Image (cartoon, rainbow, N blue to C red; front, side):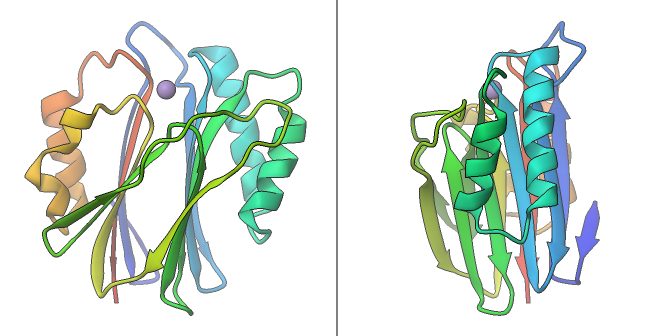
Length: 198
Ligand SMILES: [Mn+2]
């Protein structure tokens, strides 16, 4: 479990598709300038080429994290020409303004749990491969205490039904997922549990 700025606790499950050596999903998180950023990128298909495309996108996000997400996505889009495409989701928590935003292209999901309520962003069509598609944007206010569950499309809807996703202990969220669903993934799978509190 990772703790950032005394406000964020984070734990990760990641597993490649059964039979593969490489995981086509990549992720990244950091905190800087009173904000927290967490990203999942899923390279289309699976295996080495998918991993290469998603790692290239992550590298671009790391280098340009201060830019607006739409600008970052434009840069990635240009770099994707001739590569496998990617889908991506970028979560930002803005501590100064007490806001969050989730910007995505394609099937990276976000589940927010707070006070026994669930909010799920809808997956959207599209992927990033050498042209610039529209970003799907979802924004809101940071509550006193909330969970952000970020996941690639290897995670199935029914796997998100567990009540453990309301727990504030991100370690138990990931340990429970791993225990019940951790073996023999039929797609590259990334699940990041983030607990925010102030
Ligand atoms: Mn996938």
